[in-house]
Length: 395
Length: 117
Ligand SMILES: Cc1cc2nc3c(=O)[nH]c(=O)nc-3n(C[C@H](O)[C@H](O)[C@H](O)COP(=O)(O)OP(=O)(O)OC[C@H]3O[C@@H](n4cnc5c(N)ncnc54)[C@H](O)[C@@H]3O)c2cc1C
Ligand code: FES
Image (cartoon, rainbow over all chains, first blue to last red; front, side, top):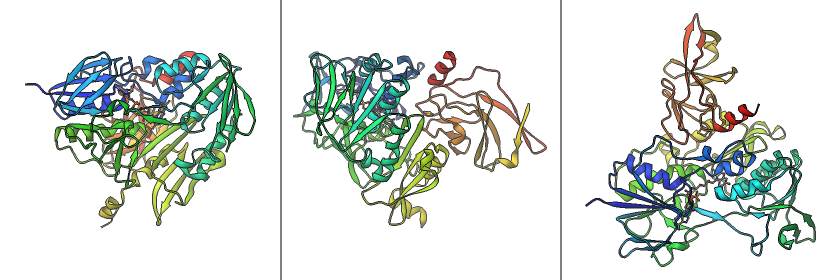
């Protein structure tokens, strides 16, 4: 009998898993279940070129027109239950699917700000539908308040500014992006807001949103009242794993897996934003909320599920990587920094918003940050290695 | 064929970005071969001359799609369309390029910009 593998979550990780199944010679049935009605599309442009109008919805398609993966898509219906005992998946429309293997790729969703539901003009940004709604609210001259100066918040501020809105960004931490980049580099990146006429208020929380049907102002914990026509809440994401309750899968801030995507249940692997996976480079289990991980890791998870031997990954492919585009500046980061890792600028000038900085631990480079330095960044990124790989190549 | 630069200006393993419209990337491989392809990735706005050259392939510096320098074909997502390849000849130590007359596959964000202009 033909085998059936279900991919739950039809976005970047889900599509990459379908491609990997076929690449690894799996010829059974593939059913891809997606809560959104759209075919897999790319999220990063939602806060960048799609929001400014430079890209259209059709440009976001992840699948290639001539690609034939022979997948049965079940779009617009979320999976609501996984039963490990008989390996069945129940969909919201009541359908029950029996499968031989499951790839969990349900990603994450925007974290809401408690108590802000129901007000018009208040947005989060995770899906194409969110982006369409936000875009139609971003009219020139309007006052936008962005809550959260993380990457998505900063990109929304940048896109809205280019559309001639009056933009204020509010951040609870004293320095934006300090967690990812450290205080020094976080402060430099945060300086981009002021460069482009965007107000940035840091170290202050939001008390409440004022307004009756439509939002009118954001009130801060220190009493400041920021008049607002539009509000974007960008305070992080949480994994879509509630549907897995009672499945027996180990969940701890995401589906827990080892480096290969294996979960505590046989025949079930997890990958992409929904998984908390051990990562040799960081030496810890983390939820990798970045695009490149969701593109590349599914091939490893699929190999685990199929028990197939895959070509050894090229050295350094385990090194985390992400980028962000803000105010025409391309920010790229690779590696992993920890509190206390010293960082120094090795090329360029932070004041010019064009430089390369290297983070070190025990005298060894562990992470690299580039602003508008793609060529140099690529060369440094290639030199980063997991510690034992570094030892191997040195010996 | 137009003269572009002396070959000695592009060390092996490096690339040169030629500022024509749209820009062209000229690669000098470790094996000493010279190739010219469109510089702009077909996925988004990135310069392939800034990418990582390995054998006869260049990896985009932004999202790691790989393009074959000989054919322009893309070997790894997210890019879907090939880049154009251009004719190259080294004459008396000078790189000459004959630009392709095909339509370039510019990324959507740039293609829309151009229409708006
Ligand atoms: C606005 C924005 C900008 C970004 N910019 C960058 C960037 O510049 N650089 C970068 O590195 N990363 C960026 N990212 C992050 C990147 O997009 C994610 O890491 C990536 O999308 C993760 O892919 P995924 O497939 O694991 O999860 P997701 O893309 O979250 O997809 C999960 C899918 O599963 C579906 N789903 C959820 N629950 C169920 C269920 N029960 N049943 C069926 N389907 C379900 C969801 O609806 C969704 O379609 C950005 C993200 C956003 C939102
Ligand atoms: S810009 Fe080249 S792969 Fe995305």
